[in-house]
Structure formats: structure tokens, C-alpha cells
Image 1 (spheres, rainbow over the protein chains, first blue to last red):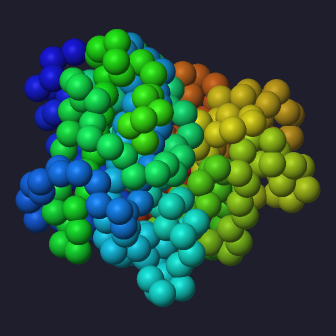
Image 2 (image 1 turned 45 degrees about the vertical axis):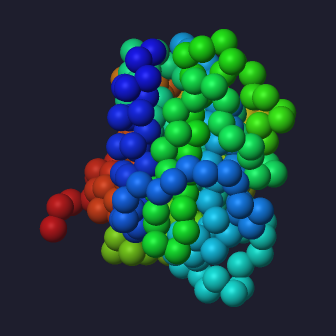
Amino acid sequence: MPEVSVRHALEESVEEVLEKMFFIRPLGEAAAGPAPEDEFAAQLTFAGDPPGWLSLRVTARAARSIAADFLADEEEGLTEQQVGEVICELANMICGSVLSRVESGITFRLASPRMVPSSDPPAPGATVHAVDIGNGALTVTMCMGNPACQMVPESAF
Amino acid sequence: MAYRVLIVDDSPAMRAFVRRVMELSGFEVSECLEASNGEEALAVLRAQWVDSVLTDINMPGMDGEEFLRRLAADEVLRSLPVIVISTDSTANRVSRMMSLGARGYLTKPFQPEDLRQELERTLGVPRA
């Protein structure tokens, strides 16, 4: 799987999902640095050819804003669980969108996304895309196409 | 005319979003029912009638594929129009779900107008 095609698909998918489903237009790329302590993170694995995993990290302030927009609710009234469910759904949509672009000839299957502790730096060979969404950064890491991606390293989450 | 719709998705956030998008799109809903997987959805459908079903594919317990199989095997429920809403837009998946009996297929991300059009098409609502 050429890294460039995964990167291109990831960039397109992040932009399209944010715009169409969350009404957010990314302001540009952000630095994908070490995870800040105050953030939400979700992760899901997928079966396909090749299998792999996707993780998504977003600063807490941005996560609450995203959840409020998605649910048409006030930020102050949202529980951690509600915010987490929206972030999981965002990860699910981005993952499915990327796989539909790069695995168009086969059927893939996504596991249910789950909230995870903030992640360490990404696994070697993973594709990382980070965008500035106005009130924080959103970082998506996608690992597929190499043996290291076939199991989610516990230490990475 | 307003319609009764059942949303089947394991994500409460996605169910809430679909409900809101239907309202935003101008599609008239008289009642919106919810289920978190195929099994729950079948229980709802055996207790009350709906005009349309919107279902995810990947769900814990009974998934969207098995849900469609069960509907197709049920003499009363097989005529229900079902629209699949999924992130998977591959031709294989779309073809598989349509062959199992889905009447429509909507890929996430989608816009409110896309959902309304698919609902109206599958319900046979005349175009204004």
C-alpha cells in the first residue's frame, strides 16, 4: 500500500467528514506533537486487506465544541460520555472513508471504536495527519500495510 | 404527510445526529424510534409499525446484514423500506446490502438533503 495514497486518502477523508458531518472547515495543518494531557482519544481496528488501526486525538476544548455541534446541544450540558461517543463516531467515519478510498476492491470490516487514554507518538510506518480546527488540533494516525499495524500496540494508547 | 422512522445504530451520538438531520432536511417525521442493533430493531418492529428503517451495518449483537436477512425472511416485515447508512462506500458492500433487501444506501459523510432524497425515493414520495 503506497504511503502516499493512504496519506492523500486520509487528508481528503478528514476534510470531507469534518465539513459534511461536523460543519467544520479545517484552518490548515497542525503540528502532530506529543499528546497534551487534556484531550480525548479514540481508536478502532479494522479487518481487510491489509488490516490495521486508526487512532484519533483531539484537544478537550475542540472535542467539546465538536460534540456540541454534532448533537446540537450546549457544551456545558454535555457529559464526558457524550463527548466520547461523538469522538468515537468521528473516528469511525474517518476510518471508513479512508478505507473506502484505498480498499475499494474488497470488503473491510470496522471494529467498534473505543475511548482510550491519550496516545504516545505513532507507530513506525503509520501515517499521521493533524489539522487545526480553530479551537485546538485534531490528529489522526492510520497504520496499515505493514506487520506492525496488524495489532494495536497497547503502549501506543 | 409525516412518517414514522426507526433508526438502528449502536452509537447514541449517531442516532441523535440522524434524527436532527431529518428535521433539518425538512423531511416530516411524526415519530422517531431507536434501536441499538438488529435484535432490538426486530423487537420494535414486531410491536409497532414504521414507514421506514435507517440502519448501520457494524453493530454489536445482530449486525445490519443479519438484520436485513431476518427482515427478508419475515412475511410481514419484508416490505419495509430499509436504507443502510454506513461509512463503507465500496461497491462490494453496497451490492451485498442491496442484494439482502436494502432499498437504499447512504454513505457517511452525507448532507441533510441526501438523506431526505433517499427517504423520499424509497417511500415513493412524489417530487414537489
